[in-house]
Length: 102
Image 1 (cartoon, rainbow, N blue to C red):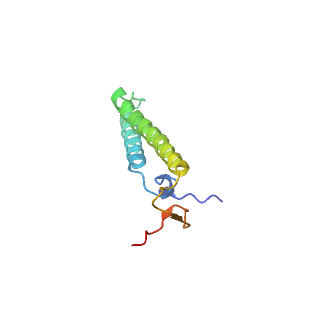
Image 2 (cartoon, rainbow, N blue to C red):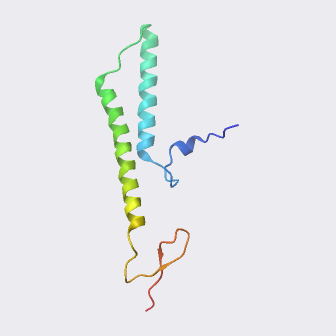
Image 3 (cartoon, rainbow, N blue to C red):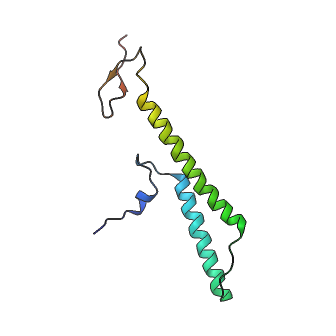
């Protein structure tokens, strides 16, 4: 049995909630509910306006660009050597700077 937790869909790999994912989900659900309600009342499938499709596409594009930028930033942080003035002590991720003695 697969355990599906709805809140995990709204979180990124680090466990942080993503407002972009929430906005995309709410817009998509709202558009589908409005479209289904209108189509049901008219008894035919209504077209979805192009401006609505563009807004949803903008949310999708924004999330893809954001994720790519975050991955690029994480990779550059991992490959960068530690600063000369701050020795690195091992911690949960091995990047916690040790306090400099006064």
